[in-house]
Amino acid sequence: MNIGAIRTAFIDVLSSIDGLNLYEFIPDNPIPPALVVAPDTISFDNDFDDAATGTFVLTILTPSVNTENGQQILDDLLATTGQTIRAKIAANNTLNGTVDSVRVTSMRNYGTRTLADQGTKYHTAQFVCEVLS
Image (cartoon, rainbow, N blue to C red; front, side):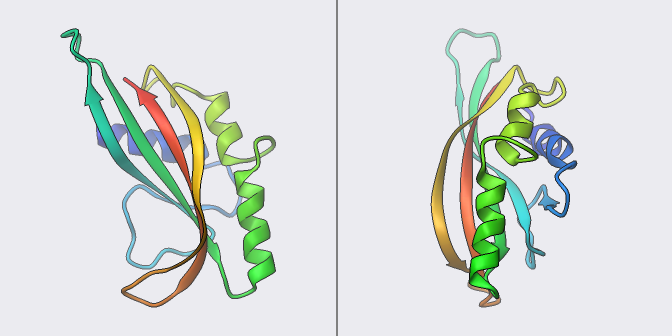
């Protein structure tokens, strides 16, 4: 499993979502609406074929300056159909051939979050994605 290639592939697949700033690495000062790709866990199979199962977390940040608008942007990005994160991944479930398969398994941590280093508040949620490689 090549973590860097998978991060890049997520960004490539999601790059057609208008207005969403995509980050392969955790930024110091994200510009919302933003999505950050990060690996969470990797399990290696015991059948000696170099297969691995990983979990990647896609963290979505939207502005909290106008609470209602920021939450609406977040809700729109979390929808299951249309030009949304989940729909883009479902439509390209090999991330352009980078992995055997990927699927969004859950959404978690919906709420408001303050980044400690800058004190900026964001509306956030996370998609958990299972990756087989």
